[in-house]
Amino acid sequence: MIKKSVVGRVDALLKTDLFSSVGKEKLVPICENHCQNKTFQKGKTIFSKNTSEKCIGIIADGTASVKKERVVINHLKAGDIFGAVTLYNDCDRFVNDIVAQTECTVIFISKDGIDSLLSRSPEFAKKYIKYLSQRVYFLNEKIEEYTAPSAKDKLLSYFKKNAVDGSFVLIEKMTELSKQLNLCRASL
Image 1: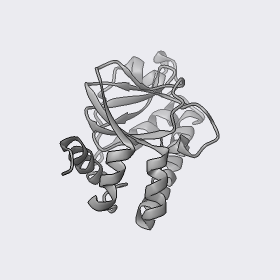
Image 2: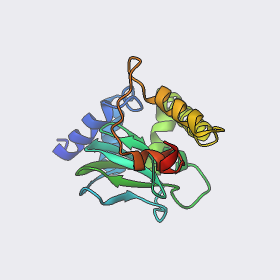
Image 3: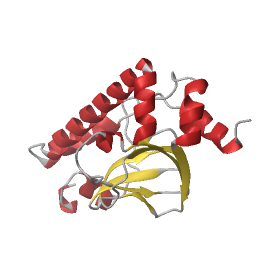
Image 4: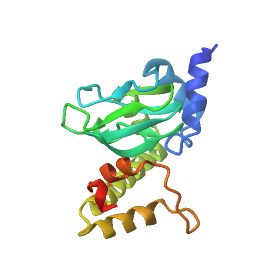
């Protein structure tokens, strides 16, 4: 009989695009042998520059922010993944801080677990490569935002990226927005 915690992990993973095509029969042994759940209180660090474990994390419940220094780079919600970019990198440390914005449950999968999936599931391997390609594209967009020649260009880029159906609602404080765009507050 499969433990309830393993069933919960499998169900959470199957809801993500990356793991959706793997199939329960391949995920059960991964979740039994290579996964662990951890819960973080609001404001607690999930991953940081001091994290040296080679694993990926999947937000099972709650929200978190990816930060570099004081700048919020991205927001994570249930189903979002982090750590994949550094899993096969020679660097021995994670490059950003991930902080729980609400109480947050994370499923951590070890490198050995991902190795097993990559060797047993060509569809997972393709989706993993697609995910990494999307991360590269996302980071290139961030570089474009930061290197825009003027405050106006940075703001336009930010608005275009965050607009929904042609409209934009600012949900951040102006101080946070200025940090995120690497602008002084007065430039906004």
